[in-house]
Image 1 (spheres, one colour):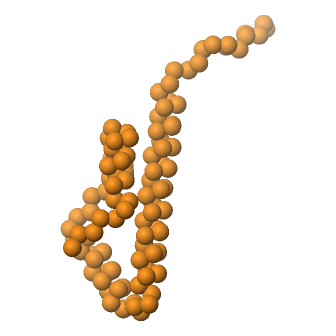
Image 2 (cartoon, helix red, strand yellow):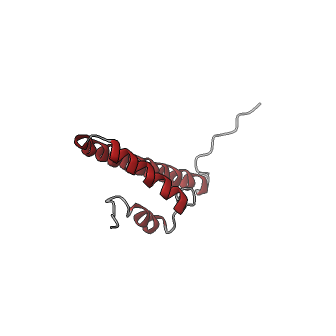
Image 3 (cartoon, one colour):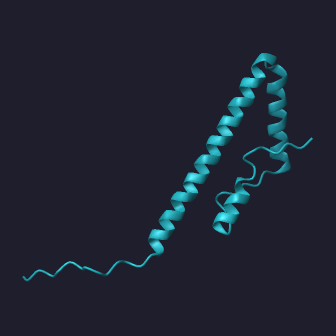
Length: 100
């Protein structure tokens, strides 16, 4: 079974918004890393009290959502910095030169 998380389309939305997704946002997960995470999570679920599984899922969802928001805010902040650095300096109303 393959699950699609509600926030998994975030990168697609960012790609449409930005025309490309910056490399710092992308993270490749190797099959070995994925296996380690899966083994760990299965161990946690197998040893956890069944009444606490709902809390675990909620905690994971909340943390994942928070991380997605942080990445989105960082991207927006970088976009603003890039816009400021690429805009020409304003030359109207220059300060008058003072006589010596």
